[in-house]
Image (cartoon, rainbow, N blue to C red):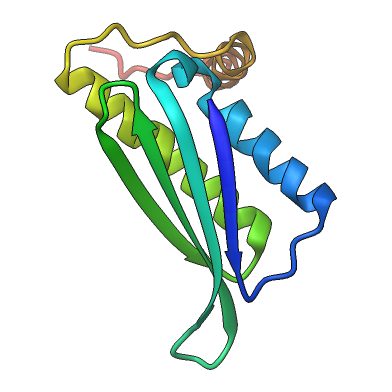
Length: 131
């Protein structure tokens, strides 16, 4: 999976560029065999309230030559990239479900976090009314 980053009116250092690639590859690694490349377009967007936001657009080309496009606008660059890559993963999963492809399981760290979450909820006491 190749990641291409295009920026318009944003100064992105090499360190930030490598962090962006690492974030995208971490979120999309379970779909790596289905993705040919990902193009990330970053640009400045001016909100209606006058603040400067970051517009992040990701276009993934799947191995079946289909394209999946998602975009997000947020004030912080890191949050915009994280949200857009998560949305892209969900959209790719939806494309794979439509094609009846087997969906890779979540990485072990995600399964551990979910197990911990459910374990915390199960410790609550439940009182049933007596009949």
